[in-house]
Amino acid sequence: MRDVLEKCNSYQCAYDRLLYTTLTTPVFFILSGLSGNEGAVITRDPEGLVNVRTLSENQWFLVQTNQDHFKGDCRKRCWWARYNFLRIGQASINPMRLYNEVITVWPNT
Image (cartoon, rainbow, N blue to C red; front, top):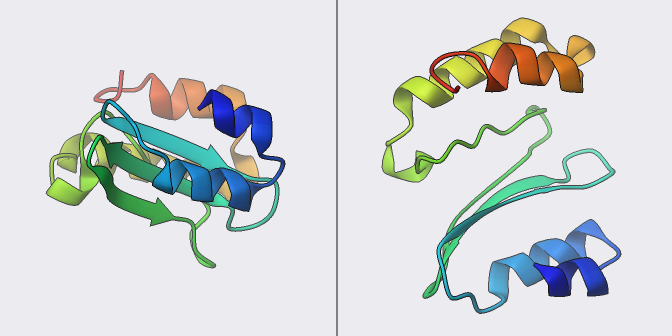
C-alpha cells in the first residue's frame, strides 16, 4: 500500500499495482478516483487476485463489508447497505449521511 501511495499519481496506476503486487496476507482494497466510474473493490490473498468489482455506467456505489460478496456470504448486511444507499440517493449522499444512515445502522454496525 505504501508503494502505491508513494509512486502512483493516477487511479489506473493504483488499480494496476493493487491488482498485481505480491502480498503476504488477504485484504480488501477499496479504491476510488476523481472521475466517473473510478471505483473498485479488489479482494486479494497471498496467492493473487481473488475478485474485483468495479463501478459501471449505471452504478454510483459499491458496498463492501468484512464478508465475501462473491461467495454469497453477505446477504443481510449487503442488502441493507444497498437499500440504504438507494433510499438516500446519489444526489443526497454526503459523509454524515453515509455514516449515520448506512455504516452505523444495523446490521452493519
